[in-house]
Length: 272
Image 1 (cartoon, one colour):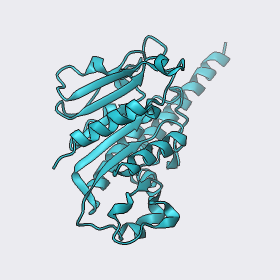
Image 2 (image 1 turned 180 degrees about the vertical axis):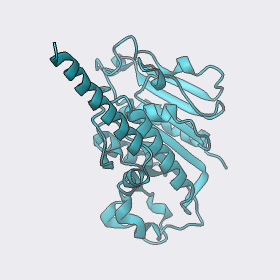
Image 3 (image 1 turned 90 degrees about the vertical axis):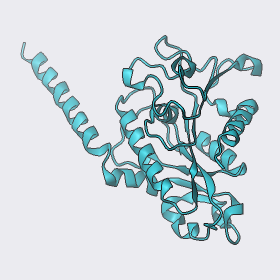
């Protein structure tokens, strides 16, 4: 008779401690600084005054390459992509996507959400409040990017994959040249995860596969096009993965036609 209330109180205490930890760390300046200090910075070689640092292959972690960034020719401003990684952190997908953007002339700033001291596991929807973390990191990176002397402030894009795509879709601040949502449907059982935020005239490209293994439930299935009403410069693309001989696919950006679509979107929406 006594054990059940005690157990309930334990669960309540654990929940309150988790909530307090979340509120205290989401926008904590030190936590946000860690995500950017450990961010990947990738710079196309043509923007360096001299030779690009060969040991970095034109990229590295922010805390280690700050001095190298001083060798960038500031008179030639470059377009920048703020890249938001998936729930697994920096992985193969991150390296693939950054390399792709770098090869095509775009600088990349990718904050590392995993650099936080407090960050519970979030893959598989285990931590609902992760959206607040990722939005805070995106906003912090955007603000820093606008003050980097070598960045073309009129051409800052945001590209997110999977969990990072969720944050990209829900990013409410303006000032972006465009956003690309990769591997996310804009649908969820959690109301704050649903839909698209931000200015209605901001260019948006969303791409998801027709049989993404992460979105098989009725709450998460579909695509972002259902949320693009009154967004004249927004497009939702559903890739039929069966045409590629596979039964399911999450990393849609690995497909050549999606890569072409991404480059076309970036080039069309670059501001003079």
